[in-house]
Structure formats: C-alpha cells, structure tokens
Length: 421
Image 1 (cartoon, rainbow, N blue to C red):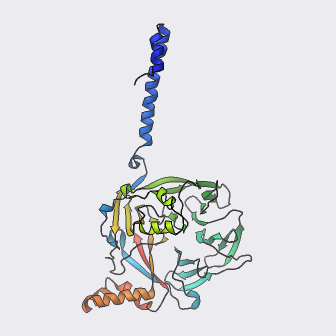
Image 2: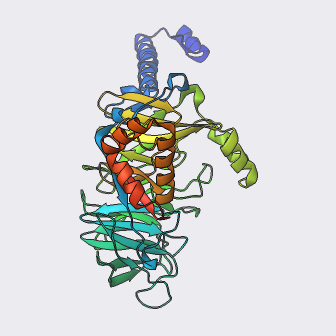
Image 3: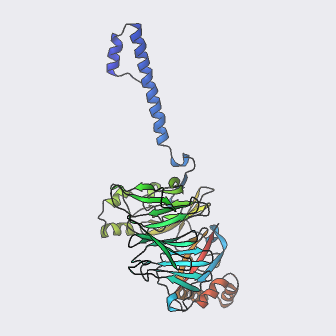
C-alpha cells in the first residue's frame, strides 16, 4: 500500500526520531484498516450456501425433467368426495382454503356464500358457518380462518374484528380491533398469532405477531414504497409443518422460519440467469401492462405459493408461459425441477399440473369436481384394453375408480390427498 502524497511530504520533512516513529505507526494503521476492510467485504459477499443453516435452492431450467409422484410422496393416495346430498352442502368451484382438523374437513368460500362448510373426514356434510350480517356475531366479509386451541378463528373480518366459533360452527365471541386484520395463523410452537396485512401505508408492517392475550406485539417486514409488492391472495404466505411455522411472500427470494415473533431466514432461491429483474416489473403500469408481462414474458421469481415439511419444499414457478413444478430435498440440498404435469404412477389417476392445497402438515393435494373425475375415468376406459382397464380398476386404480363412480353426477369436489415423504 502506498502512502498518500500528503503523508510523503510530511515524511520527507521528518528528521526527529519521534516524528519518524509516529509516521511509522500511521503507515501500519492504514495497512491494518485496509486488511479489516478486505476481510469484512469478503464476509458480506459470501455466497448464500456458505451461510450456516440457510438452504440454497438453485434453479437451472436446463436441468428440468419429467417426474413421477412416487419420487416425492408416499405410495398411497386418498380420494375424498365432499358429498352434496343437500342444497346446503353444495360448494362453489373456487375454494380458497381446505383444512383437515381432527375428524373434520373445513372449506372456505369467500366469493360465493362467504361461509365455511364443515364435513366429516369421510366427506359427509355436517354444518356450516354462515353468519353474514351487520349485528353481533355476524360479518359483512372475511378472508381466512384458523384453528386456535380447538376453536375456529375468523381473520380479515369486516367490520374490523376477530371472531371465534366452535368446531361445530357455533358463534362464541368476538374481539374488535382498530387495525385492519388480514390473513392469519396460530402457531402452537410458540403460542402466538401471526397476522399478515397487505398494507401500503408508510411506516406500517406486513406481519404482526402477538400472544393469545393480544399483548407483546412484534412487527416485522416494514412496507417500503421503493419495493415491488403483489396485490393478491396471501393465505399461503404462512405454512405450518409438523415442527415449525414458515413465512414466504411474493417477490421475496427467502422463506423464513418463525420463532417467538421473530423470523429466521431458512431457504433462499437462486434463480441465476433465469431470474426476473423485479425493477423491470415495477416500472410497468400496474394495470394490464404489468399483468400481460407477468403472464407472457416474466422470468423466474417466487410467487409466495408453497408447501413445506422438514424434509422437502414444493412450489411452482413460471418462465414466460411455461410452468414448472419444483421439489427441493432439504436433507440432500437437491433441487428437482419438473416440466409439464407430474405422472401419477401410484394410482394411475390424475397427473397433476400443480399442487395447490396444504390440507394439514404432511398432507397436500388438489381438488377436482366429481363430474371431471368421472370423465377422466371414462377416458381411461376408452384408451385402455378392456382386460387392462378392469385389472387397473380392481387393483392400482381401485380407490380412484370407486370414488369417480360415486361422484359422477356431482359438481362438488373430490379431494386428492398426497402424503409428503
């Protein structure tokens, strides 16, 4: 390292031993500071995989391949028809959330009936929460629900409040709030509520967490007007595995693990040369121009829709118009990127294009109307030899075929349930 001209001029004038000694110290101070700067710069620019505990999900489209369900799921698939033997049991095509809890199945419909239907674990209708109105124990709208200590809690309620119902659907109590409350979840791991509010207010936070007594509020992820945010469904941002609560958000490249109101980075996406420049999207008009770009020309970014266990993570990605399924083996730190649909080599039934629902920790899947499932069965019958079809329907595809026959005239969904390895 060279001394500055100013330092050299002083050195040239210095004859006294003390001054020479001071200049000597000054020189080595510069060297020491430069060394510290280089070390710190190297630490700040470490690659993601060198950070302890952070799992790096590397995505390379050139490695995309075909895939089978048996690679990622246990070798049994359940089919549950949510029966519509009464008018009250009839469901709309769009269900925003389906939750298994103990021996019941709860379905959320925020656009049609604005209600929650309750079925038993075999799919028989039991009751529903339908409290639309303006009085006590009623709501004009709501956006989400969760189970908290054996009770159902409604989030995103208008007017601003949280509402409690029994597991059978009876109203219990309500708690009004000055703040807007969005989607939410309860973590039994740390006994805290976690709420997401899609705010655009300067100084506000997206995530708020508090205990069951509504004390000890912790705020995380502040709104930043310079960043890109998505308007859309946020119910999948929180995901519960058997051991942890996780949080991921559209356009973020990191999935966090929640712990006592704090968020620890656990998984990070590395899209490399296939990643989307988010500033390019932000510069577009947020109307049709941006929507057209996202649907047709956008490269890879995290959509905030994912499923997770202690062993693997699943999400879907989109590059321009092509959709990919991504499975990440958390033990081996290995990415599996699948193109097209995933072959059902377990029951020989539906080849899923994407997996949309987390029913409960360890169980995920999709839904299909009874009529559509039956049509798939008939297509298989046409495309297979008679003896081959009959053998399949009695063995590998038995559960599929039996439910398809029972639900053949129903518009209600059949839930297709996979168990994560």
